[in-house]
Amino acid sequence: MAGSLVAGGVALQPSAEQVALSTNYITNFDFLNQYLPDTYEKEFERYGNRTLSGFLRMVGAEMPSNSDLIKWAEQGRLHTKYENCSTTSAAGVNTATFTVNDTLVPGTGGIAIRVGQTIHISDNAGTGANKAIVTAVNTTLGTIDVAFYEGAGLTADGAAGATVYTIFIYGSEFKKGTNGMQGSLEADDIFLENNPIILKDTYAVSGSDMAQIGWVEVTTENGASGYLWYMKSEHETRLRFDDYLETAMIEAKPAEAASGALGAGFIGSEGVFHAVENRGNVWSGGYPVDLGDWDTVIARLDKQGAIEENVIFNDRDFGFAIDDMLAAQNSYGAGGTSYGLFDNDKEMALNLGFTGFRRGYDFYKSDWKYLNDPTMRGNLTTGKVSGLLVPAGSTSVYDQILGKNAKRPFLHVRYRASQTEDRRYKTWITGSAGGATTSDLDAMEVNFLSERAVCVMGANNFVIFQG
Image (cartoon, rainbow, N blue to C red; front, side, top):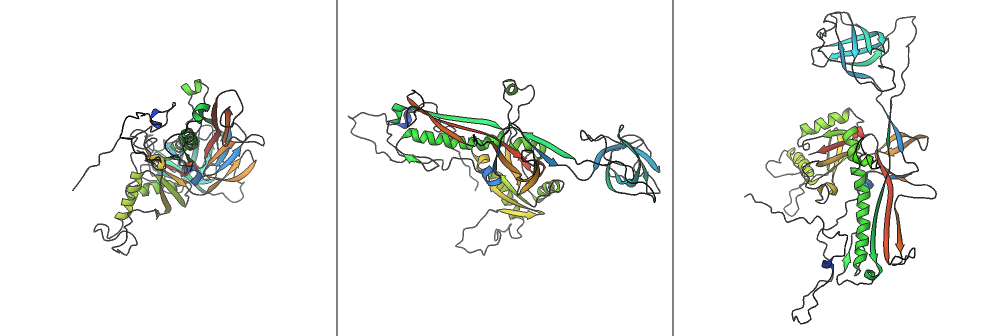
């Protein structure tokens, strides 16, 4: 029998206010009332652990940086392939001229095909393919002259100008007693950069309020407890700031030209989601729900770095979809008699979840609280992110600060620091209360500051699942 779940209201701002709350204290002082209330001494933790941070600590690392700009170089492809080529030659000709219409890498001086190289030419519509040798190259016009190895000549007619060809280099051939290859190729490096942003927060309480003892014992996720309400607020400000240190690195966006933020002097930064959306792989319209969908993801990974081990950080629905897909592969799944490597003991608790699977690559999955939390990305309809596939391990890049190649995690945070100033996580107290003696302000102000940026290296190995 199908039922329904009526959801209770979600308090999106349970206690975070900029003023003292009357609900934090007893206000009924009617001593003529003979029915005094019984009170619970300890605050009930109705939302469990409310913090969201931990993702970057699991998949990355933190390291110092001493500049306003972080730059690194990533390797380009080793081999050359063009997928948008054309010719006006008719089918059957023995020689032809092809024009490369792909967007060329700036600074390369033209196409990376040289005389004497052997190439594979195929019609993108699937009507035919040829092998040929390059006899001439015009880097200014972006054209190459080829001679076909097949006696029948060009198989796919290009005279109408509508046929699109793909060309890749597979070798070379030279006659006896001839000169060597003319021209050389430079390494195709991709230079990327990001800039840190400054994050701040503060908590203030007057000296008089610090002398107020509450009637309920309060606790926070970092283990702090006591009867002083301002201590709870200070600890929660710290926990909230810790969460923002991570979520800012996930959500940050560079300020675009003509944007209001840029006009106001803010430049933004490139967060994880922005980097993957622009330099990585995007699965839109939901998430993979069967093996055919995952085969599509795997085919894309084959074309990228082909990292052996990957972790999928998913929301709850995506995690259940993966569990259901894996359960359906069990030959007894339809009958409900077996689910994985179980003995079907009647006393055991049936585990209906999976930690991962292998299909060409190893995929491990982990629930990401940030995507489920209703005060953050949980329950979104527009701009929803269901999961993020992150490659495990590290990659080798050229670090301009060190001046040499270095191993770096695919995902890591750089914070501003020098021998005299460490801005990874700064906190200090000002005022004249709570032990502070910095001013005549009758209050205690706790200040928080960090300056950091996230570096997403090899974003082509990441997959973001949207919708």
